[in-house]
Amino acid sequence: INAEYMGFEKIEVVNILDVESAQNTVKLYGLDYDKLWIFDKIHHEINQFCSRHSLREVYIDKFDTLDDALQSALQRDCDAFETGIHIIAVRVTKPVIPPSVSVRQSYDDVARKEAELLVAAEEQQMLTQRAESHRRQTVTATEKEAEIAVMKAQKEKDISSIRVHQQTAEEVSQAKRDAAVSLIHQQTITRELDGQLQRAMMDDKMHTVREKCTADALHYRLLLESEGDRKKLTPNFLRYKLITEFAKALGDAQKTVVGSNLPEAFRNFVQAATGDMKDLPDLGAFLLEHQ
Image (cartoon, rainbow, N blue to C red; front, top):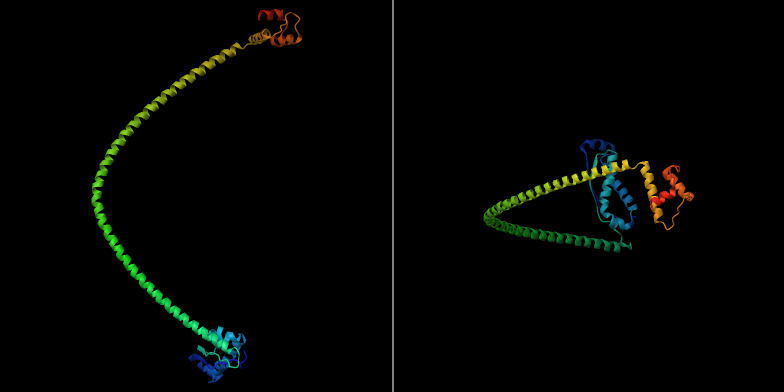
């Protein structure tokens, strides 16, 4: 920012020098030590700040940070060289823009609007505080009414509890009598059910015994039949049974062949059944005899 466009009417720097460092600082920098470390330094820091920001930022957007930026920069250099100087505060007046600069009117309007916005914000905050206070008063009144209502409800509850307690004594006595009658009834039913259960268990046991006896008898009969069949199934009986069934089959057939000269297939069947053809004198006579 060119210096002819902007200037600062007044810059105040509040500082203090430590007693322990005063002798050494005055010895090194003289009685005008503040001129070297503050007054000359402040111009340099303002130039640095203005060179890094636009005219609008210095005049409006960043102006509120200028005091802190200058204080931090001055304190940093004083601490680096152990001067013992403490920067308490830095106050910079609003920069002045010459009337010849075309944007001054715009910046002045912006500044005025910001001031109006600040006033409006303060008014809004005041209205908010009033609304909050009214809300708190309303809440307090509501809470008091709620407490009164709770006290009344508790009183009515106590009265109702006393009445209920008086009625409860009679109801408890009646309930005890009903419970005793119900217990006697339940015990009677339980004894009846126990008797029915015992009878059912006896019936089941008798049925099981009968079924076991029946099963044992059937098993014994099957064993006897199996033993008889085993003794009956001899080779002679089996050959006899086979020839008998064969003869029965021939009797049921529509065509019967009689004689000693039977087809070879019949002779092979009889030989397989008897095991020996010599023991069969006349197959035809045997078949005629068993038809």
